[in-house]
Image (cartoon, rainbow, N blue to C red):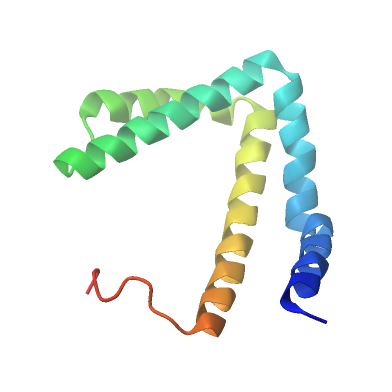
Length: 116
């Protein structure tokens, strides 16, 4: 078996792992509802805006914090969007772990000490 065969084998396993299955199912629910999709889209835009502001100025404005608070309340009151974000978080943790394992196997520090 070569590396590509192993990658296809891994892809097959990944497709059926609980974190991916759940994320796929709740994602479909969110996409089928225009209001839910808009809430999630607005949340993503605010996250990006907060991240950009943090990177540029070192902090997040009170205005952005207030908007995030407001949308947080909207998300908490919307079970489908909240469920999606929880499933996405579970997947993200699993995916980060997988990438860490793969990076350790490669044995190369791609940062070349930039963050040190």
